[in-house]
Length: 323
Image (tube, rainbow, N blue to C red):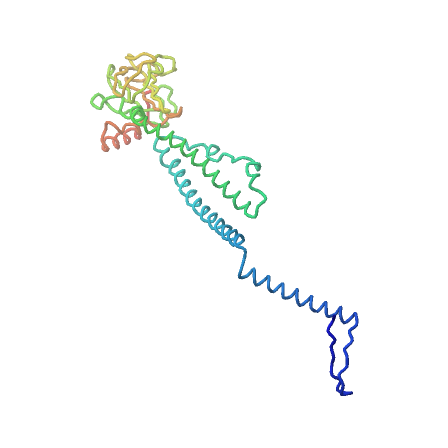
């Protein structure tokens, strides 16, 4: 039974019974309901602020840890990329240059890392983009390291062959200084002694007596020993490997045969006056990768610096060739 309530009426100086309508009950109900909701919201907010779910706190802590680790991992990747770039630069500009090798092919250094499906299982999460990008950077670094490893293996093989290469490079005079009368003509445009026109002279002319010994200037194989090349007379071509070849022309006699292996300093023939020649001499050429170069730059093994400078000076002053 509901409790009957009264209120004092100051006009009549009597207590009068309070009567409630349906509207009054509805307003009171709404008032209490709103107050309860406000209290409940405040209570929930306070609870979540000070008494959060342990699982939620753990998840947030793990998320912060994951983000921190991703940042640290990318920072370490930056350092590794810098190291690999420096190693690649030294590989192409220093190590390979020493052995005369071409830079490692760029398309082998920068191979693809696969299509978008490769990372499909990582999508759909808040940190998907960051994780996918990091994994792509790792994949690119792995491919760079594999390519660099293969490149260094090639350099290592070149280093193992260094002794053979150094022995194969033309590095001595083909005629001994004691047997040499003079260097009659150097590398460059010269007056041809027979045709009397300016013509490119692609070698050095060593004047010496007929029968003077001629020596191989580097280890190699006799590519030809005949008179097939017009104007060279009796001549020998040595193939040294590593892109080097040498030619010895106008011989009086040949001392080797095609296919024979020779060593630096080995007798291969004798000075003569065969072919298009105006006097006894040896015409000597050096070819690098098929291009004729100045032989004067390949006498660094058996003459002093003073002799070398004198040789260059005499070769430059000669104005007429012997062939």
